[in-house]
Length: 337
Image 1 (cartoon, one colour):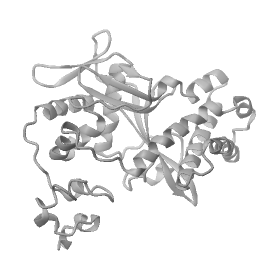
Image 2 (image 1 turned 90 degrees about the vertical axis):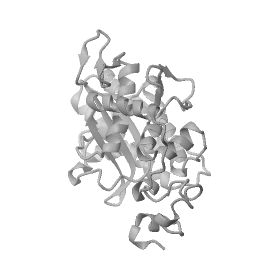
Image 3 (image 1 turned 30 degrees about the vertical axis):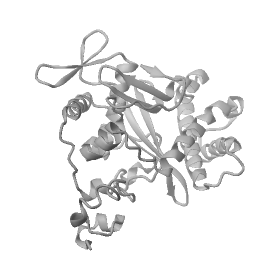
Image 4 (image 1 turned 180 degrees about the vertical axis):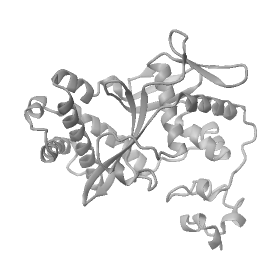
């Protein structure tokens, strides 16, 4: 089922989100403390900013004057830049004058470049303006859409559902830095690039949303078999092994050659991976031993350590990580103090 009353929703355990599912894979103890015992961990600042930024992104499509846009040239890089500048000029009118975080303007500019490229690509492939607007302009039901699945007790919000001629794309906007190993050099240009270097975690994240989409929008069913595995069936009870569905991670926080840039990692969704996720969800619900799992990557991903490492896990792992808890020491096991 889906819900459009409000943009963002949360369901308590036993419902599990993508974040809860991934947290269980990293640390069962952290999963229990946050999702089962509801020990609140405040969202990082970048996540809260991203929430507001997504709303601003979609505001673009409601304030575009399509009469102006349709009359603009679209055949050259300069034309695309002019369209991006038009998008940017109308988007910044939606930002309060006292807004202080100037870095967000780079995200907005990168988003404008992306949608400019998207528009120009559509103009070159289709003659019908109605068809171009259909592919370009997301409907209200295809942006920030919340879904939940009662049969499997899972839920999630999809930033944008996009359509191409023969395929649907589940888009997830990322306002943080691009993971250094996510992109190959040749993936720095183009529109909605397909990348083969998405990590396993990102693959599961994308397929988690893809599975929810297939159940809620396409009315597919994932049915558990006697051996514990899952199979997917369409609305006519025919087994589904492949699907014309992609997932894409869209990053708008990069600077390339001195100007804001967007980067997109995109791959085909995998029914096999979706069935694997459901098996892991069964393991999650059957789990009885929520042990701490010390690991330099798990306890201090990126620049911010796990909040429990600094509090209730601090004494428990003082011998493993040292008595001084900083991200640098946590990530460097040879530098314990």
